[in-house]
Image (cartoon, rainbow over all chains, first blue to last red; front, side):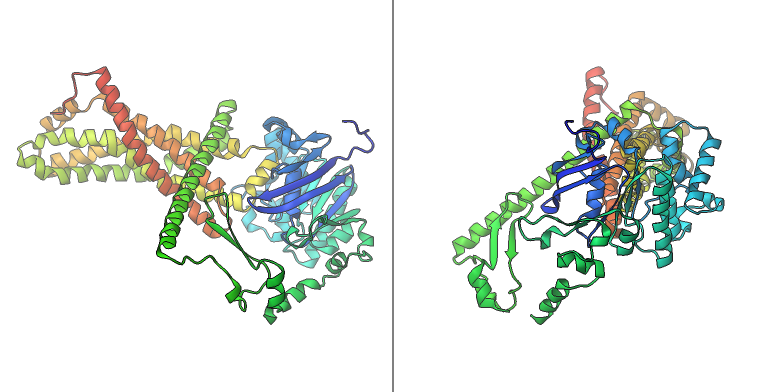
Length: 272
Length: 326
């Protein structure tokens, strides 16, 4: 690497293109995330936010472009090395993705049991500590994910993501499907996690309140299909405070939650 | 809508052949002018009878192409899946706690149904063939016929079919649900390999336990056939067993158990493959489960034929003089 240590970002995405069959989802994305930053990736449903997140951790293979984590190109790593790098991430999935054949305790302990040889008591201690960190009582450990509410599942998902003390935490729609109070609890947990640990966080969301509250920087993606040719898919990149005053009407509309041009499209369709 | 404007500016409808045979042609409509611009949609309509025949032939060829491409893709996908699984199987053994539940599910839980079908198929064989054999005065040969059919063919195929239905489709449904709810992604994101964690234990369970289940089906079939022949049809006990002993050799027993290993591998690989490549939604999971059973069943039957031919040829090579049954 020719770059010096200071300007080398922890996650460096360079001209990333992802397509599924004929359907292009991401085109020419450039994002650099410095260590310690909390980045919110916003955009409407289907604009490729989750795909971007999954390509950061190597779950989606890009057609072209490079994703570098700590200076290493993930696509070039072998299975073993990729595993070693993935352990440095914590991924909080949209639907929590808890293993439903296991109890809460087994779920949170899963990464520990796979990657460390700690004795059972020590593992149990860590599990309880992680659950306490996300505000869950020890009584939930024996329950199955199906018996938990949506908010509890999300929190168990976060506890599981934290169990190996990752350097990067990726949140995929952390507040989707939750009531406003629970959404705010999750937002607070994201902030608390960042305050307590030296983590870099990427939050994919379409909830503006989350983006405003937790992020240091916001990147807004726009669906490729509705983009003019030669236009960048990233239509905003900057601090959350400046979003409302953005010169791009699409950004301002998203922030305010106005249908704008989309409504006109629908009305035009009805008029036919 | 300004229909005239749009049609003048840009092609309203673009029809072009695509390189992939999977899609015959793509119709692109630019602008929402479908309803009032039908007259302008100049699809190349076949005019004469010659054009129509050529069109039909082209379509037919494209269909064959699509089927071929799909089949090759599917086989390739299963082959890559198998290679990955085998490479993980050889590099690292799964842990006991992932292995044992699968062994329990495949072995212990399948035992009653395999034993039951084995017993009944033995009795059915006796029922169906008794009249023919008795007509020739050969009813004591029933023992040989029933038992050789059981140990070489019906035991392994029945155990395989039962396992495909009970375990193969369950694997597809379970892994399919895990795929749909992102649990497989979660597994990868936590630095575990889904092939190593999910597929290898299931393959090992099927490979290790299907010979045992086949042996159970064989045994129960022999017992069922003997019970019906000796107790109900009143065939002479000594001759029934004597004929069984002289017709059924160790090689027959071995060939049945040997074939079952391939059936077990096919059940696990196809079940897990369908689960891994499951379409989203309840319908996708349902389809994956059905496909897992149907594919495994077809593969079992086809492999049974070819393995049967191969094993008989090998037998003839080793013992060229002993080929006759009677």
